[in-house]
Every structure is written in structure tokens, then in C-alpha cells.
Length: 428
Image 1 (cartoon, rainbow, N blue to C red):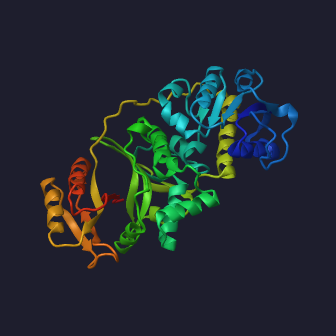
Image 2 (cartoon, rainbow, N blue to C red; image 1 turned 120 degrees about the horizontal axis):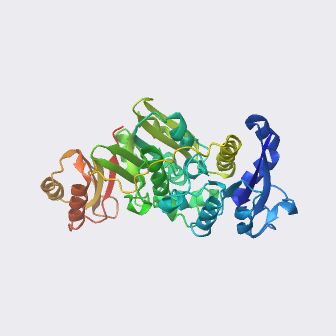
Image 3 (cartoon, rainbow, N blue to C red; image 1 turned 30 degrees about the horizontal axis):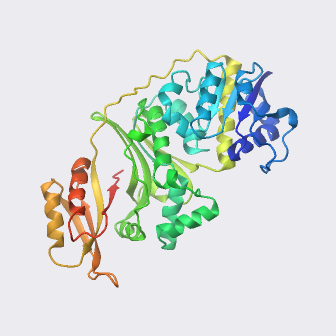
């Protein structure tokens, strides 16, 4: 029986989960894969802190990652240190030393895709299932099960923190700030939650999903990205009245006009299955030419769901070693795709002074920008203690660049008292 040795670099939350599974289930993995996968060493700067899995034998402990990536006795390197500095050095050094690399680091892969994918070949010497949707096997299914398909579009709820916050706001009729605080207390949100609530984490994942699904790479900084911080409970309630939920979506469309990638809150119709994804769960909805439409659903984060995906990648890497599959063709990636103009319907909430003529001013600006209004909703009276009212507009389909220009002009009107809230409507 073939024996494959693994070195884990990074002994934090996920690393400890991976170590526990490799030690506890070595026999099960051997039985199911036909390969003896041995944990050779674990690298970290501090082994004194309790990780909740018991003591690691001293002969497995290592503090210098360079020894692991250069060791002839280690076949697979698992990078779980996080960040994009040391992690980049680890991954590139391991690949150049002929190791198979497994990582859950979406920020690293999306930021340095050009450099890493020049030496790393997915399914051959680079595995990253856990980097996108945790335990949900979207990478494997896109690369293998859907290999005969052209994926036309993808819509992902890929950040559990944001999905939890939006779900909780609506279910308990609470405002954003209070739910964020609760999410932090429960451990669903970080103390510094910007990566999640500003949409940055979702943009990292969308960058990788585009590379996998369309063979086209766009740097996360070049993906139009909006978070959920400007949403209020009133938006979720108005959306509900119209038959929609609000989700933070990562959207990708590969069209004849070009590639359309974006991250933003969106109104999703209740009849669509994405609308029912609640709490910390993730989902990815794909539209394909041969297999039709499908949705993947499950836990996208957490110690053991993520560790489970990492171990699955380790086993796949071990199978490559055991069967000498390293001669597979390298994926062709377009690093400069043509980008498409975006056109969709919009929900817009203005906070305006309660007096006649306001709607006429706003609709005039929209009309001059070739944007037509489908419906208008306005409460009859101002909120207690204010002279402002919410004005809700639903537009017909409009080009995004024209919508941005119109909203910028409307926001400068003296009758508009807060920054308008603009949410795209996704017609799936």
C-alpha cells in the first residue's frame, strides 16, 4: 500500500481540525482511499496553547516551515497560516520543491493567481476546495462532474456572516448594528468584520469561481463590490412586501458581450431556491448548458466543515501521487477578459423631505438618464420627530453606468436627506 506523508503548516482553528481528523481517522482514510496518509509534522510558532484536540506528540512539532517544504520525506504541504505574505512564500516554495499543495486561503489565491497558477495546476499539484464554500464541494464538481458543461452564470451566497445578519434582521425585526453585535458575540462575525460585511471576502471567492467556471481571472480589486452596511430593516420589509428577500450575492455571467462579475446585495424572488438559504449557510446556484440549473448548499465555514474539505483535498492529492497523474493538461486561463456592461432592474430607497414636487424632481433626473420607473411606494406621513419619508422606486431595466450617474445627481438635491439605497433585482 502506498504511503503519503503530510505536513500541516498553521495550527490554528482549521489546522487543529485537520490534524485531529488525520490522526483520528487514519484507518478510515486508508480503507476508503487505499492509501496510508500519514501526518508527518505540524508547523506552528506556539504549541503551548490549547486547541481543544489534546497534545500533539513532540516528534510531530516543527517551528520552521522551510524545513517542511524542503523535506524529501513530505509529499503534501497543507498551508493554513492565513494572510497573503508568509502564506505566499510557503505555497510557492512548496510548489517549486515539487510538493502537492492544499490550501484554504482564498485571499492568497485570488490576490496572486497569476503567480501561483503559473506553477500550480488545479487537480494535479494544487487543491483548494475549502477556499470557496468550506465543506460544499463546488470546486470538485465544477472541475470534474461538470467538465462537459459550459457554465453560463453563477449566483453565490458565499459569506455566512452576511447571510446570518440579513436573515436575523428580518426574522427578529432588528437593525443592522444590533444584529452585527449579536453575531460577534456568537462568533459568527470577527471583531473587525470589514472583510465580511463590506463584501471583500465574497469578492475573493468570486474571483476564484470565475477562474474555475469560466476560465477567466479578474483581480478582486477589479470586481465591483458592495457590502451590506447601508441596508436597514425597512429595506428587508419593503422587499418582503414585494415578494423578495435580500441576499448578498456574488454574481458571474459569461456573455457574448463579455464577463460580468459583481458582489452586491440583491432582491431575490421568494420562488427561487436561493431565497430560502438562511443563517450561516452558503449556496452556489449554477446555470449550465448540458446539466441544466443546480444549487449546492451547506456549511461554508467552521472548524470541522472546513477541515473536512481540506482532508478531502489531501486524499485527492495522495491519489495523484499514488497513480502518477501529474501529466494532466494545464488549465488555460484568460487573465485579461473583456468585461460586459451590466443592465438590470433596481430597487431604490430615497429619504426625502415630505412636501409636494419631490417625486417630480427625482423622476425627471431618472428620465433624462433613460431610466423608467415601474412602480412607486411612499408612506403617507413623515416619521415621528422628522419631516422626512421613505420613497421607494422600482425601475425597469437600466444600464448600471446610467443608474450611477442619476443617483449621484439625485443625492445632491436639497430634498434628499440621506444617501440613497440602491439594490439590484436579480431575475433568475
